[in-house]
Length: 277
Image 1: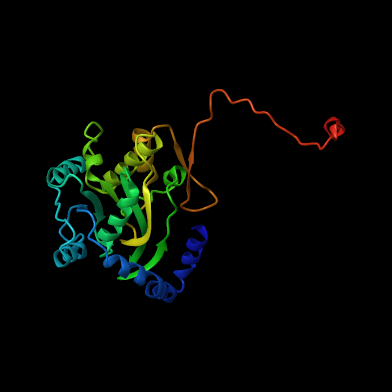
Image 2 (image 1 turned 60 degrees about the vertical axis):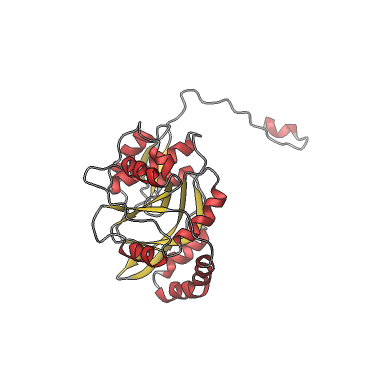
């Protein structure tokens, strides 16, 4: 995954290569998914709730009659409110937050349907995404399978994932999460924290580029992310910038009060005299 991302990072200087990859590799994969059965019922939530968001998603829904969209959060509504509203109509639905200007692949329902078969009890399914610049797709990010430490350093859920509506609706006892980018980031940390504490299975990775994000959406704000981690992550984590890499962040855990005892075994191949030197 790291090698392919390094390759695609170089692709931004040669956009033609990425377009070629879309034609040769991606298009056949998506076409085969499009021929499959319809996926689960999906509720798209606009982040923030403006009329222009997810236009392409709604048009695809009306044309294909496969997607259940049209969740317009009322003023003051929270993520949990939307989840309860969705579950009241469709208990097995999934919620996909869509940030203003972002686009979703037209085969997302079918791809999500395939993933859910393998997801078991997973509460989150996430996928790869790229950027939209002047209407063109660029800078794809091929994500790894789930890893708590990588997620702590970089939120790769928000804007390109689906939450099981029933699981989100059960979170009524926690802080009410606003329907905006900060609330979405906090929701990702809250749901991922359930995995870290053993309350839920790990999120499932769907290795397809299904979200096309407006550059700047989901920009990292260290203070906001730290506040959400302090509130929702099961153990204390301190985020800090990596001085040698601009924009890079690492997660630091506190040192234990009592360090464990460690035995060091040195193989000497019957040369005990080496230990006396």
